[in-house]
Length: 292
Length: 136
Image (cartoon, rainbow over the protein chains, first blue to last red):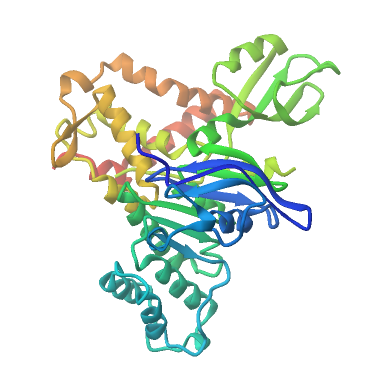
């Protein structure tokens, strides 16, 4: 049993007594690709900043490589890559100089990897950062997070400004990292379809809390849309267990059910004297339904 | 080789699992066929390599695939995978049920549904999926 790279317990953060994140617990194991979902303001960035030790927690604790993340030694920091939502590039530098500055901090820096990716991603190394488009800046910022081959790569909305081609190239790079089996990725994104492709674990933040977390496959199996069709009008007392919301219309009803298990199908059909159809949802549907 | 739709309600691992299982059962992937490496398949479809790895492991446990040290996974020998006609038919059942149900809900006739299935049957015949996986 390997120990997790990241382990948080009861993690919370308040500003002036107002909670921005409360009672969050999770682990990130070697090889995990974690997709972090949440509406704007749900606490995604705060969560990532706590993990990275940029800000002290006001409740609970988070351990990174076994250390308190707020007191992370330099050697542990060198094993982490971070791509912030707002890039921290220096406008006056050329892309090549910017890369050189960051590379100088890391003994493990991989010049070949960064050179190859900057060609493939069409990042002009001679261009000054201030003259770059938002997308170019984002690509450069991702390169800087990858160059030292971190064991854990953390990305906050990394693809917001990338075109579909660049996004696919980015995804391929994440797959390369994940193929290693011992490196992990944690990324927040509003592009649900990317999360759908890549993540094996999902964290859904809602109202400053961890609303749902777990294995992605079990998320798709456990939150489903159930259609019930009865032969006669449904009684007023009609209810589907664990329904998040339900719409009824005469003899039919549709509900989003959490915690669905395949064996519930027959019992429900008998109990309700209705025909039951179970529809599996896309991640985007699940996300929208959880926020209704 | 496979058709994977990440943006579908069916988890990706299950799509891949069922396709390999079906193709091995039908002989479309004959015994000894080499499967792509985990990394290559993950890159080709832009999916998590752990998903592919999970599918290969499950299919190995079922006896559908064989792991070979330092070499690609292969489809296991016929005795274990070429399931009888009835068994294969059984695997098709849930899919056909879905079609029948959808047709009823759309208030189509049995004839409509059978015709649509026939058309789909013909359409899939020249799909690359079919061609590429035939033994060379």
